[in-house]
Image (tube, rainbow over all chains, first blue to last red):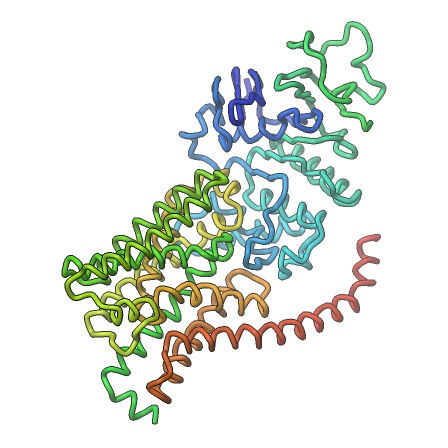
Length: 259
Length: 290
């Protein structure tokens, strides 16, 4: 049996007493490429944050590589791509500086930047085609380019598992294709990926599993159907643990077709 | 004239104090500005006044009580900030007012307290720095620079993206307290030189100045430290011209003048850059298509 990157059982999250996640059971095995789908406000982002321990659970439990987030130590195994860079910290930072900060979980205090660090940063910059912008301030880049910086930052840490919150939101078609290629490369290397998406677009071929969140519950969990839409066919093998719950929002399938 | 001055012990002490403050304040300030807490120094400065007055009241060295109280204040500010509630800034404001009012009150009832002494802490009195003060300032400066050297990489990640710091397993709470406490120590160092009311100026203005000219974080910090030293030493020298010139105010005004100058130069430099970019632009686009 393969290792499990994430294992959440009965995960509940509430903001100010308002439930956002109402009992999520989700196990992600290594090598899977999971897309978390759902309408805006369905709790997708909350779920990835809860998986990482960034948002505390109000009920249930979650494990990262078999340890609760508070006692997890091998953070270098996780590469997190948050939804948006909080650019504009008050001080400029170059693309290279931000990408290099992805190595932090692998670096020791007082240890100088190693050749391996530099090589990983250079490779990450190359992967997102930003090598020629390495010396520019991140603040000067476009939204799509900033998203690429965030992806490069995660790549630079050479983690086993990537967690990406809406990596395709608001980025141009070229960046989407670049991300799809990058993901395909990671999958070949046996990496695990959990990504939140509103629509998959060019990422579709690399996804191995689609999980639809609706109303704070998993509304659909299964292998991705082919574009014809196997979901509609009777007798398909997808699990519907909460079939009684209607999928919230305009979604008709796991793909999250555009309205 | 400067060589004559250098032989005077009073001036030597003042120069050392100015140098140390000029180095430390912008180094810490870079992290604080990056974290969008530019006014943190002001807040701590207000609280530190109570510490100073407590020193007079209890007959201990004001610098030491100021360290204790401002560290406590910085920790309190950080705890309020970490809660992340909207009432946070109101809570901070309450702390600031309490710090000033408490300081004025305690100073008034302290046996050796006077308005003149209060003023020397509010607006700085670099000429009255004693050798004992210098030792305390030097020790604090070593601590501050040590923190920046040892934890700089982690503090950069924390101040750039706290979420990312957490998802990298960094000790976020410890680092947040560390930066707050370091800021408190810096406030106390700078207190004798520019005064509590202007302390934050040396943490913020050199950083704002160097940002106009730099593109990266490290470069900004290094340049800010240079500007900090130039302003603090320059202000000190300016104050030797006439006894009427207050060093604290002249340091801050020189720093501000530097900022205005950098603003103009930065605009010029950036225009040059964008010209360059528009020239290389088309070829880049061809590469991207290919």
